[in-house]
Amino acid sequence: MTLQPQRHILVVFPHPDDEAFSSAGTIRLYRNMGVPVTYACLTLGEMGRNLGNPPFATRESLPQIRRQELIDACAAMGIEDLRMMGLRDKTVEFEDDEKMVKLVGDLISELNPSLVITFYPGYAVHPDHEATGRAVIEAVRRMEKSVRPAVYAVGFANNTVAEIGEPQIEIDVSSVKLDKVKALQAHASQTAWMIEENSKRVDEGQPMSDSWLHYERFYLYQIED
Image (cartoon, rainbow, N blue to C red; front, top):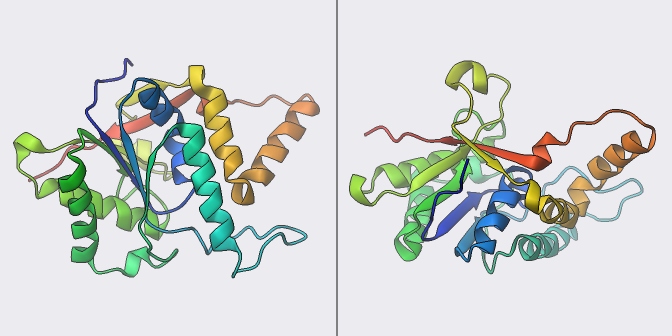
């Protein structure tokens, strides 16, 4: 589909690399059009499972590694307004609901975005993903209808399509595929194994679909009053 004009885009995800997998191409396309993008990353992903084999990081050093990876990924996407919100990985689900809604609501009040990108609550698998999506949807729901931003929601649980259908939004990001790859590569502590494995499959002549690098899909979340 053709990109819809936007005034300002707010991206809200809990972990560094959530944005690279889900929406890096879309972000890059909008930045190429001059649309401002603010990325509110709630944690530094300090509980990421991958410490390397042999280890390249410890639990103490991983937060700073992932912080720099996040900065580098934002550079690849053209994001100039990165907000590191300071919550702790794997604890977002335990934060007070009102605190989370206020956090998102304050960002929306400050930035006045016409579009917010986040996870689809109920279909985002990880508890931190779910908590993030719920907070965004509730913050938007509390706004007056006439000023609500659109919400593009990422859903990828196994039952997503069966229960809510195919995503309404499909964006061709093939023209910025290399930028999306750069964003993924920036998060090397968590993605290097995947990139290496995919490269190995190609070298061995195995077929590999890379449609996820060509298209990004979102649900247009309908807010219920």
